[in-house]
Length: 191
Image (cartoon, rainbow, N blue to C red):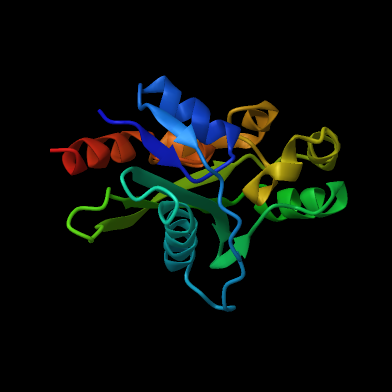
């Protein structure tokens, strides 16, 4: 498999790509991530992943570029990264005892051929059921600092695992990249 360019600074995405042997370099994008209110979660992540990939692809015409974006949605409301521990606690309280969805949008832009590039954009959804944790557990986790760079205020791969009762779907998607699906699509695009 040829080397790809990952248009993301996420350490979790880098870890997942390394885990399955996808060779890559990193070139982070700095795109506007604002979206119109009321955008459906699946369309939201697809659009942002495409923006990120396109911003980086312009600098790497001969290479495959991979962009991704992950969000948490509860009852249609998108929960991004908290701005502080207080907001993290409020999000965790909202999620406690409920099932929410984690969406990751992925955009794979193929190398330029004859002046054209193909873009494969898709999303993967995983449903996560949280324990109905008491206030002490939620506050302790919110104050740990771990939730601050995570959509929905928790990281399933870290201490946030104590909050998760079960998942239905792709575990790696909850970490930030549906790596099995990405791998398959990268293999198909290189044939």
